[in-house]
Image 1 (cartoon, rainbow, N blue to C red):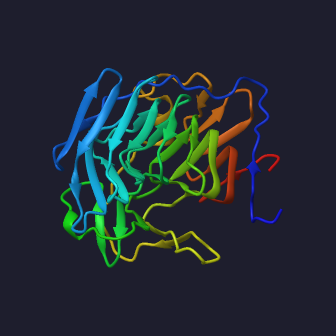
Image 2 (tube, rainbow, N blue to C red):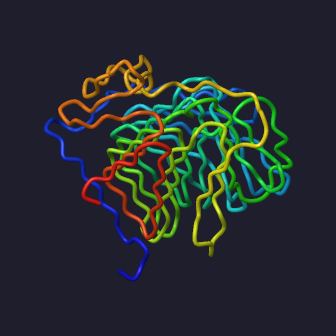
Length: 310
């Protein structure tokens, strides 16, 4: 192939059925720390307002809860001058997304930050014009030490430029990201999943773009380097002692009350879970993926990287 990676396909061979988690999503609810408005029209939630950066290029929303049931749509209202829409979830519950995420009115990239954890259910889909970044980081960085924090107050006027640094202040393993759905961005855009554990039994696709999937240890700083560099992912230990947060742990995330009982999983009682009838055990710090399609794919695990028939 002339490209670094035109297509990376990973296939699990399971003796039993594929992993299916019945999901119970939370309603979408603003926490009123930004000027975010959630307008419900039937099964669609329009996200309007928000708070902009000083140059108007970045738009920020803050939610108490953020989740979607099957057949529900969240529609972020944008405009041509907005380059990035950044969202945080502050309520302490994982985001269970089992519907459609879309952006209308502009070509903005979309960021979702929830340190407690993020689950994309089997019916999760994307209809966004730009790139998607989902992360369980505690902060997203702009330029010289300007941070969009998952909790507390932010100086939104100073958050100018391209978000490219992610701080994980969590002690131990940060929150997990689970994908069962079809997450596909439009050609030429990027798809990034950064968490303490990342498991995808669905599809990740970024035709002519980049996919970055990384399991990041706690108390770390992640940098997405600029175009033209050979490596596009750097992970460094934090140099300062910051206040740490406790995410939802992997077995609780997969089998807890927020997502219903995951009958395809067995909680081993030691911080790991096993896909029933498969012999595959997953634990904190793992990256596991079923199907990844991109021009360039970077997968990095803090513990085990599971790629079968890749």
